[in-house]
Structure formats: structure tokens, C-alpha cells
Image (cartoon, rainbow, N blue to C red):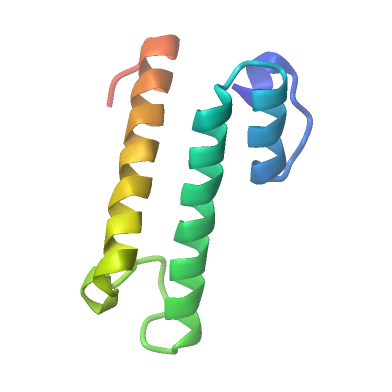
Length: 93
């Protein structure tokens, strides 16, 4: 989307914000995507800093139920966005 719209920002959060500003993304979608990304980064970083696992995998069983709910919601947001991209660009998995 960024390439298609000529968005030059390289930071993902700035790209999302810019796409919302120019009307490519709905404001609510942009906010949800940014919040989901923040959550994914925070969970991964916390796990990596704990020294338990040095990978991008998140041990969901170690999360409190409130964070599992947030993660579930974030994954739902990303899935819906991915579906809209697939529809827009006529691609399938």
C-alpha cells in the first residue's frame, strides 16, 4: 500500500499513520494495526529479555489471560487486514 500510494516513511508506525492521513486506511484500522504491532513487539521483547527463548516465538502459555485476550484481538485485526489486502491486490495464500 505504501508503495502504491508513494508513502516514503520507513518506520512502520509512521507509514500506518500516513496511510490513514491520506485516507487509504480507515482511522480505526490504522489505530488497531498500530496497537497490535506495539503489543507484538512488547511481548516478543519481554520474552527475549527474560533470557528464556531467543527467537520470535511467543510462549502464549506464559501470558496472563488479559494479555492472551489482547494478543487474540491483535491477531484478529491483522487477519482482517491481510484479507483486505488479498482482496485488493487479488492474491491468495
